[in-house]
Length: 120
Image 1 (cartoon, rainbow, N blue to C red):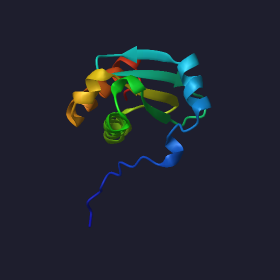
Image 2: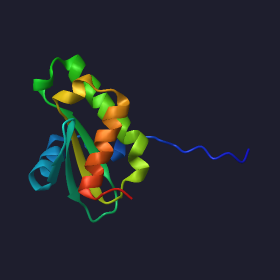
Image 3: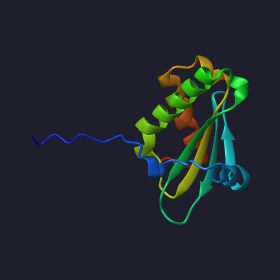
Image 4: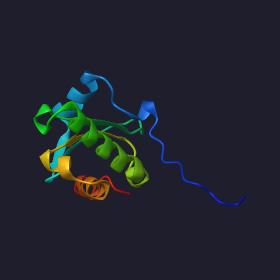
């Protein structure tokens, strides 16, 4: 009864959904890249964090792009408690992510967050 289970949810209000939101982050954000992904970061004043996931058509078919976005989403979901609040993020998959597994995706995501200075 005394066991505390940590919730790793990704509620809808924490996701960027509109194209306008993505474009604002692309335009005014600072980007950090590695072989697997690109992370765009924009500081916010309201203290909340939102994230969007993207995979361009160059990566392949819709099946491949959706898999890349699922990997990015899961890497974020499992590590979101390590990231500071008050930022908007867009995480874009690159070609190397097509062949990656979850462990590699999570390592790449945490590397980008460390370089961006948003890890707690």
